[in-house]
Image (tube, rainbow, N blue to C red; front, top):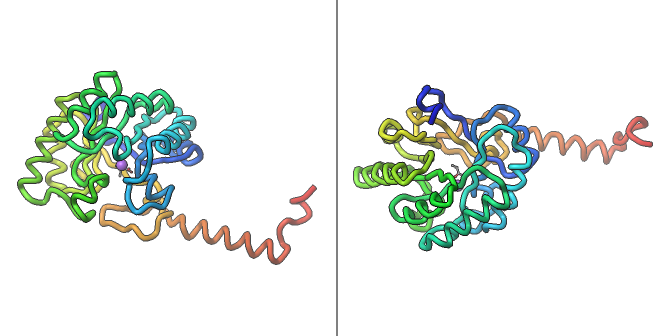
Length: 256
Ligand code: KIV
Ligand code: NA
């Protein structure tokens, strides 16, 4: 909120493991999200739905060990907070107790507000997530831009206000028109972090493996690739294979 007041944009990226999180933290990121995108990126699932609480905790714990300065937020996985606020509280407590993260993130507005309030009541900071909500892919059927129509846009604004009033410290807005992203950011006191939600948001988030160019098939308009790491890694592995086959590796100096 201090950064929002000062007009300083917030930079957030995902991480799922110790080695990457260490690099990302040292490079000056503000927030590291242990996203349930780990389900896709780390485990190879088609959606975020299959990842479990224990798997998210494993990723969260690994990331927290590496981080010295950034805020660490852990996604609550599908099925651990919807419908039953006591279950939501217990899931959030388990995440906080075992990972030592700073906060949790949940997808949804009005439908899950009881869970949000109950988690907050235990002193656990909550980040909201509206717009495209990948855990609801089976309801929407596609990953296309959300809230283009007035009715859905209005509900998103109401949900954002509801989350702020409940006490969330920030929200993520995913894949919505830039105009709506700016409008919500202006309407809220808490920071709004966008992914495909335009430059009017108070911060931006991307999936680390997407922006590094490790994932190759995912190319939405909002994704800026800062590296083509897939090519770099494949080049290095290919060189190693050739060096082993040709007996160039190991050389005299690389053995005892
Ligand atoms: O899981 C994730 O990586 C996310 C970001 C895309 C916001 O929720
Ligand atoms: Na997520």
